[in-house]
Image (cartoon, rainbow, N blue to C red; front, side, top):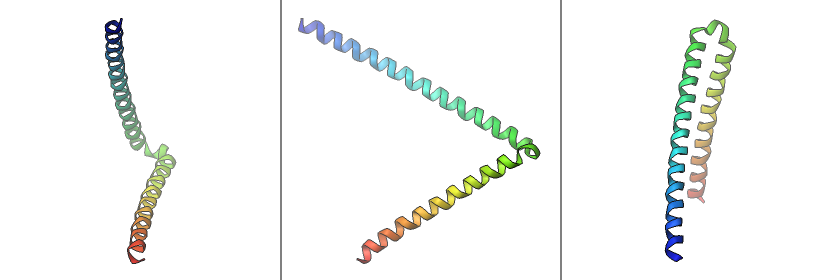
Length: 87
């Protein structure tokens, strides 16, 4: 009885690993597919910038805001560490 439950547990574990690997592979494929589609859309938008100019400008503004936020965060972290060292 115990031996059969151990075999069943091993079988379930092996099946679980197979399913997990398949799910992981599918996620990787989907992620790459989305990235390729996004790159193709971006290329098309840039090729027809006369039409997509407002979207491209908004995207550029968002990217600049992200960079500004990152710099502010880094500065806050550095200042926070310096304040701890001073106190």
